[in-house]
Amino acid sequence: MSKFKKKTKADTNIPTSALPDIIFMLLFFFMVTTVLREQEILVEQKIPQATQLQKIQKKTLISYLYVGKPKNTSLYGSEPRIQANDVLINTSDIVLWVNQEKDNLSEAERDQIWISLKADRDVKMGPISDIQFELREADARKLMYASVGRVENN
Image (cartoon, rainbow, N blue to C red):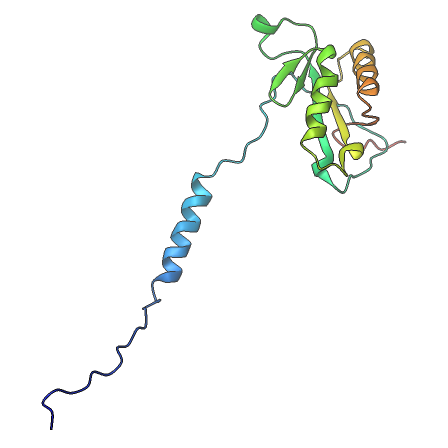
């Protein structure tokens, strides 16, 4: 007879009792350290109220233009300026900006782009009309004007 016993198969169970604690710690870490990027508004905004509102279902098709007096008047002057994303642009740059925004969308969605114009209530109609003309030139014909809320008609 042999003096050596045949080894039995080793138990390969991995203890998983601490796994939920580790997962929640990682989840908490990423929740605390993640910063959701939002645009920094460089122009003053007092949005007018509306009488009729319509909600858009697919918000990924919306690109925003902000129009108003710059917050930093010493650097940008006191005339109303146009902000697209995080940059102040001129009306002549709107066509280029619209084309860049369309490039960010899929090919099937490019003709469905909406431009949301968030204009300060004190901005005159001249710059708004110029923006509308440039948007027509860029073939961005779906334009909506952002408002704060509904005004009740008496």
